Image 1 (tube, rainbow, N blue to C red):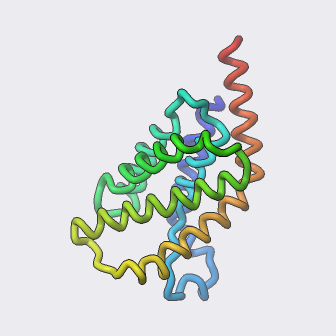
Image 2: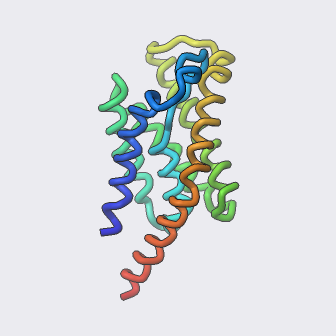
Length: 178
């Protein structure tokens, strides 16, 4: 039963990403900067840090599946989020062994992951000619506000997510031993 919780939470975050703008104050929504919620991505990073063992690649599978779902539901081009989520989660998984699993490491990995993912998405959109924005404007108006907003989201869900993922990891390991 535990194995169904993670996809259910990821799906819920994906749905809430789409309606999150309607819950923000008008002063934030109508401002010049752009806040992009990447809650699925934040939860995937938490899975890498607090749930997965080194030899597991469950988070990368989820990144591919939910990246494709985000592409289908929210974007006009298939594969952009699927590719960037998978590559970035793979990178985070590789470097996650360098730091101990705690709030600070989750913030660092989330910030690095969001910057990497957003820059990759921006590069892909520039290459295919979908958008044309100056990098300085992009960093100031979209990248920095997006990173800050998603780090705030991480800090709000951190106590719950760590408790859930740690407990589920222990239960699954006990099942494997039995």
